[in-house]
Amino acid sequence: MSNPCIYHNNREVFIMFDVDNINEIKSAIFELTNCRSVPDIQVKQGEGLTVTLRDGKAEIEACDLTAVARGYFLLARAVSQGESRWSVRQKRHFENCGAYLDMSRGGVMTTDAVKRYIRQLAALGMNMLMLYTEDTYEVPEFPYFGYLRGRYSRDELREMDAYARRFGVELVPGIQTLAHLGNFLQWAPSDHLKDTQYCLMIDDPETYELIDRMLAALASCCTSRSIHIGMDEAHGVGLARYFERHGLVDRFEMLNRHLTKVVALCNKHGFKPIMWSDMFFRLGSKTGEYYDKDVNIPQSVIDSLPDVSFAYWDYYHTDEDMYEFMLTEHERMKRPIVFAGGIWTWSGFLPQVELTYATMLPALRVCARHNISTALATLWGDDGQETNHFLASNQLPIFSEFCWRGPDCDPDEMIKEIEDMGAFLTGLTAETYRAFGAFYEGAKDRRTGKGLIYCDPLYPLISEKSNLNERIQAYTWARETLAKQPDRDEVRYADLLFEIAAAKARLIQDIRSAYDLSDKSQLIDIADRRIPILIGLYHALVNVHRAQWESAFKRNGWEVMVHRYGSVIARLDDVAHTLRRFTSGELPRIAELDETPLPPARKLGMQFYNVYVTPQF
Image (tube, rainbow, N blue to C red; front, side, top):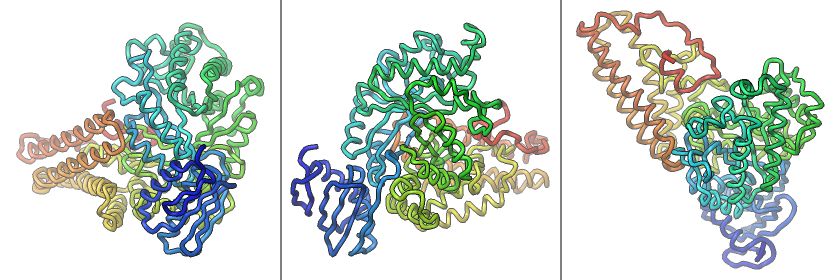
């Protein structure tokens, strides 16, 4: 870089780092943290990160731009706490630490929102951002690639890439080169590229022409030489149309052959590929499971692997033993390892806070002990991107603090530091985020809150293990907690969710109770008063959610949420009409309420919108 400098208020002395660069970082971090009282600050290049504050003067010694940004952030926090003599010395325990944001499940973030997210990452000293784009980027030769999905233009990608570099953040494209391409393969012009509904046809020359064009498009607008090529969850690959053409083949060999071709194309375009590791583990498991301790990946397969980094993804385990086992198995493959943990944003409407802590604290302790080079926080948007990525920003410090503080910190001290960093980053208290987490049942993947927002009032298909009275109490506590920060849009959104979920739970209980007791007066009250009030709350939620969506995402994908809210509102109106017909004698019985309720008996792992709405699938 040119124009290296030291800062003393508005006076620059050129020593190290670029003047404009440092000035932009400083302004961004102080604006993000609302820091007003700024001491004299000297910035210079050095090892790791050291920040000192003495009697109105401060010094930041940093190894790179994200370390500088973290230095400003830590300094702003110290000043806000009234510190006048303070210091900290830290170093990276992961060479790369960042986030992997889902841009493929309905919500594609605007360029301005991505820039805002880059500033948050830099403030924490996180130096990598991957964007998960299955088909949401422009490939000119394939006009149906990302059609109507909010795909990024090449100019948008270039703009975000350049902005990230100014903060020392590497913007890495994350794509798919085998599975998870159903949104592209649904179109008739893509049909010849299809093996299964979601997987490309391995060994077909046109498949590799597509992948070549995908890589060329990204190489023209991304300066990072890393690329994530996906290849996860390719269930049934080689067993559909491929099987019709070629018969049964060795699937290890088939997958390796495909990988070798994709890696060669990556090399052609100057990329160093990263791939998800699960398909090799699944093929080595008798049950097809990723986390199978009896897995057997033949040494011959390992020896024949091309030059690719393996990304181990795990969002589920709460014990260190499984992470130890899986990382040890990955080390057998003698390839660079990326760990992808999860900040749980894919459970519906709000982040699943307790489960994130329960899984990621042990995971990152083990990663730090294993000297993993790269640790990423994935924020998926499965089932329509119901949860805005920014609603979980307070949990990013789970990753940043293990990166900068290492595995040996006292667990209680680490949790307090994570919560304090998250609160200073977002302006929302740790207690507010714990209230967000009350949408779920502790550290369990049980999505009762989401189920209550969507489910049918007459036959609610929510978890049979959920106690509605306990849920109502939890939602009441959450609303009382959220009332302490009422002026934030995120809080208004969350409060409406809790109000609706509690009202819907009471409605479900009271409709059946009143019907069983033939209490027509209560049924009339439900139809004429309570359901219209609930419909009004849904309309309010639509407005608040729309504003939140448009603050972060392109309009594409919002229509999915509108369809869902609209169907819930229409069904509530229909239920009110049905209750009126029953109480007037027009309907002798209500068929839905005459059936004896059974447990929903659906797999907890399939907790998407459709399973809550109707059994008619």
